[in-house]
Length: 135
Image 1 (tube, rainbow, N blue to C red):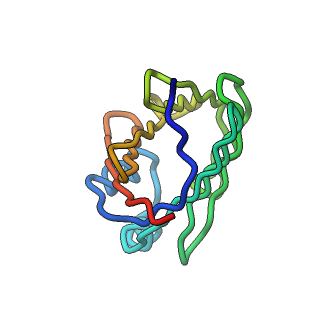
Image 2 (cartoon, rainbow, N blue to C red):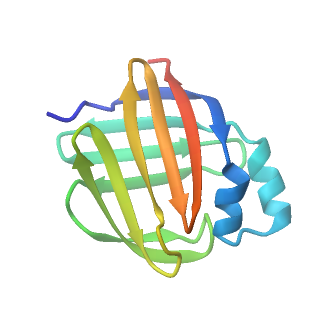
Protein backbone atom coordinates (compact mmCIF):
# COMPACT_ATOMS: atom_id res chain seq x y z
CA UNK A 1 0.00 0.00 0.00
CA UNK A 2 1.41 3.45 -0.93
CA UNK A 3 2.37 5.78 1.92
CA UNK A 4 0.27 8.79 2.86
CA UNK A 5 2.27 11.90 1.89
CA UNK A 6 0.14 14.40 3.85
CA UNK A 7 2.28 16.99 5.61
CA UNK A 8 4.21 20.23 5.47
CA UNK A 9 7.82 19.88 4.32
CA UNK A 10 10.69 22.39 4.52
CA UNK A 11 13.39 22.62 1.88
CA UNK A 12 16.69 20.90 2.82
CA UNK A 13 18.77 20.61 -0.36
CA UNK A 14 18.83 20.37 -4.14
CA UNK A 15 21.18 19.22 -6.89
CA UNK A 16 21.22 20.05 -10.61
CA UNK A 17 18.30 22.50 -10.63
CA UNK A 18 20.01 24.74 -13.17
CA UNK A 19 20.40 21.84 -15.63
CA UNK A 20 16.69 21.06 -15.23
CA UNK A 21 15.70 24.71 -15.81
CA UNK A 22 17.91 24.88 -18.90
CA UNK A 23 16.25 21.72 -20.24
CA UNK A 24 12.93 23.59 -19.96
CA UNK A 25 14.45 26.58 -21.82
CA UNK A 26 13.89 28.91 -18.85
CA UNK A 27 15.65 32.24 -19.51
CA UNK A 28 18.83 33.15 -17.61
CA UNK A 29 17.27 35.93 -15.51
CA UNK A 30 14.46 33.70 -14.24
CA UNK A 31 16.89 30.81 -13.62
CA UNK A 32 18.98 33.06 -11.36
CA UNK A 33 15.91 33.95 -9.30
CA UNK A 34 14.68 30.36 -9.06
CA UNK A 35 18.11 29.12 -7.94
CA UNK A 36 17.90 31.43 -4.89
CA UNK A 37 14.54 30.04 -3.74
CA UNK A 38 14.07 27.48 -1.00
CA UNK A 39 10.50 26.31 -1.56
CA UNK A 40 8.35 24.42 0.92
CA UNK A 41 5.93 21.63 0.00
CA UNK A 42 2.49 21.15 1.47
CA UNK A 43 0.72 17.93 0.53
CA UNK A 44 -2.88 16.96 1.24
CA UNK A 45 -3.30 13.27 0.41
CA UNK A 46 -6.83 11.86 0.75
CA UNK A 47 -7.07 8.44 -0.91
CA UNK A 48 -6.55 8.89 -4.67
CA UNK A 49 -7.03 12.69 -4.46
CA UNK A 50 -3.81 14.64 -3.87
CA UNK A 51 -3.03 18.36 -3.70
CA UNK A 52 0.65 19.35 -3.88
CA UNK A 53 1.48 22.98 -3.12
CA UNK A 54 4.95 24.30 -3.87
CA UNK A 55 5.32 27.47 -1.81
CA UNK A 56 8.00 30.15 -2.20
CA UNK A 57 8.49 33.87 -1.76
CA UNK A 58 8.49 34.29 -5.56
CA UNK A 59 5.56 32.17 -6.79
CA UNK A 60 3.32 29.40 -5.52
CA UNK A 61 2.24 26.47 -7.66
CA UNK A 62 -0.69 24.20 -6.81
CA UNK A 63 -1.20 20.84 -8.50
CA UNK A 64 -4.44 19.02 -7.74
CA UNK A 65 -5.09 15.61 -9.26
CA UNK A 66 -6.56 12.15 -8.92
CA UNK A 67 -4.09 9.28 -9.11
CA UNK A 68 -4.41 7.35 -12.37
CA UNK A 69 -6.52 9.98 -14.17
CA UNK A 70 -4.90 11.89 -17.07
CA UNK A 71 -5.54 15.64 -17.18
CA UNK A 72 -4.33 18.78 -18.96
CA UNK A 73 -1.82 20.58 -16.74
CA UNK A 74 -1.32 24.30 -17.18
CA UNK A 75 2.39 24.98 -16.60
CA UNK A 76 2.39 28.57 -17.88
CA UNK A 77 3.51 29.76 -14.44
CA UNK A 78 6.57 27.50 -14.77
CA UNK A 79 7.60 27.62 -18.43
CA UNK A 80 4.66 28.79 -20.54
CA UNK A 81 3.54 25.32 -21.61
CA UNK A 82 0.61 22.96 -21.19
CA UNK A 83 0.92 19.19 -21.16
CA UNK A 84 -1.06 16.00 -20.66
CA UNK A 85 -0.23 14.70 -17.20
CA UNK A 86 -0.86 11.45 -15.36
CA UNK A 87 0.27 10.59 -11.85
CA UNK A 88 0.46 6.97 -10.69
CA UNK A 89 2.05 4.91 -7.94
CA UNK A 90 5.09 2.76 -8.69
CA UNK A 91 5.36 0.80 -5.46
CA UNK A 92 5.98 3.53 -2.83
CA UNK A 93 6.87 6.31 -5.28
CA UNK A 94 4.36 8.81 -6.65
CA UNK A 95 5.32 9.18 -10.33
CA UNK A 96 4.21 11.94 -12.70
CA UNK A 97 4.57 11.81 -16.49
CA UNK A 98 4.08 15.14 -18.28
CA UNK A 99 3.57 14.54 -22.02
CA UNK A 100 4.19 17.55 -24.24
CA UNK A 101 6.89 19.29 -26.23
CA UNK A 102 9.65 18.60 -23.65
CA UNK A 103 10.70 14.93 -23.80
CA UNK A 104 11.18 12.87 -20.62
CA UNK A 105 9.40 15.46 -18.48
CA UNK A 106 8.03 14.48 -15.10
CA UNK A 107 8.78 13.92 -11.44
CA UNK A 108 8.63 11.39 -8.64
CA UNK A 109 8.08 11.83 -4.88
CA UNK A 110 8.92 9.33 -2.17
CA UNK A 111 9.46 9.27 1.58
CA UNK A 112 12.50 8.08 3.49
CA UNK A 113 11.64 8.50 7.16
CA UNK A 114 10.74 12.17 7.70
CA UNK A 115 12.34 13.24 4.40
CA UNK A 116 10.36 13.82 1.22
CA UNK A 117 12.43 13.27 -1.91
CA UNK A 118 11.61 14.83 -5.27
CA UNK A 119 13.30 13.94 -8.54
CA UNK A 120 12.48 16.24 -11.49
CA UNK A 121 13.32 15.24 -15.07
CA UNK A 122 13.26 17.05 -18.41
CA UNK A 123 15.15 15.88 -21.50
CA UNK A 124 18.41 14.42 -20.08
CA UNK A 125 18.43 16.62 -16.95
CA UNK A 126 17.71 15.23 -13.50
CA UNK A 127 17.24 17.49 -10.47
CA UNK A 128 16.98 16.08 -6.96
CA UNK A 129 15.43 17.94 -4.03
CA UNK A 130 14.98 16.90 -0.41
CA UNK A 131 12.46 18.28 2.09
CA UNK A 132 12.05 17.56 5.82
CA UNK A 133 8.61 17.01 7.35
CA UNK A 134 7.83 19.64 10.00
CA UNK A 135 4.13 18.84 10.58
